Length: 294
Image 1 (cartoon, rainbow, N blue to C red):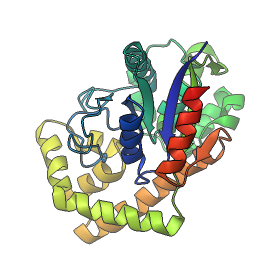
Image 2: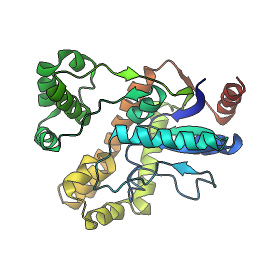
Image 3: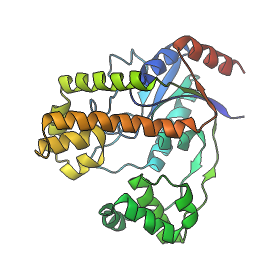
Image 4: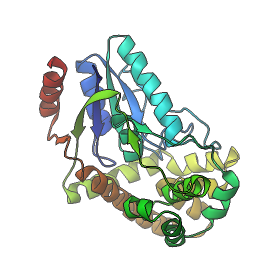
């Protein structure tokens, strides 16, 4: 019988962390983060990482796992996250997987089996210089089937698919072996409300020292290129610090970029019919209670 896991997902700024903490407190749980940037140490304000105070004593796992200088893959994440979930279950507690990175979330929910291939950094470096359009064309020639299903604008995913196709001829079909029985709760907000929340949160983080956080990371030896590769806050603030755009331009472009990011997250989540979209904490509590009773 599969062990139970509760998943809380949604776009950026929708209130996932807060709901996760409330449910974990009520149902004697612990939280496993599913955020592809919160795994990095020192990237706090930029990733909207939950603070110690906001955790209200609820243990959180998979935050601050690796230095931003190091590369960290979804396969590495999956391995560590499954270990953390099993540790929580061993303590007779309820694991909550909370985040907005679809790739990380579904690697756990669906138990993706990643191809056991060592990364080819030389090839990746070469492909990194190409545009997403060029990468898509390369993949189409190598493996037209995979090209049909891949996210066309996801550079990292395109590079990995090309790398696998070059090594073994074509990207193998994704094998899924779920290890957990999941209840998936989603939070979404009306478009205009989310827009306002994104703006409010961005300005609050700037006030708290977001620009200094990026300066500090640079001082620690993280290159501009690496900072830019993290996207969103790190990318636009890195451009601003390099005097490639003004403060006002940086704020405007960053706001737009975060809005687009939220839209992309929702595009992915909307396809999943297993998600229960909850309107409030009460609804989430009832669904959780019923799921745990079964």
